[in-house]
Image 1 (cartoon, rainbow, N blue to C red):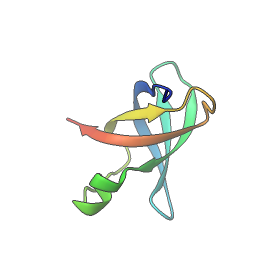
Image 2: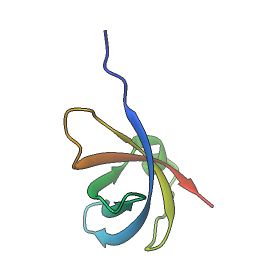
Image 3: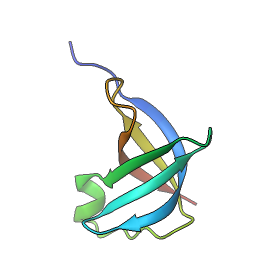
Image 4: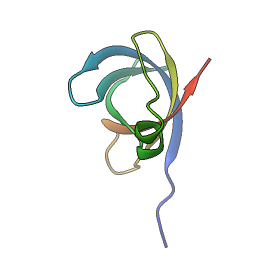
Length: 71
């Protein structure tokens, strides 16, 4: 059985090279995030200050995958 992802929201604070982002969660925890393949395919651009929805693995809470850009 596959493990379930943890859905969290945060704000992009730093844009790093290689489509990596430093994101601050609502509880002030900082994570390293990358964009998912569908966002990469559709050329979705993220800048500092954007609100994003992410998926995190329950095993590593310092990395995440950005799945959606919120308004």
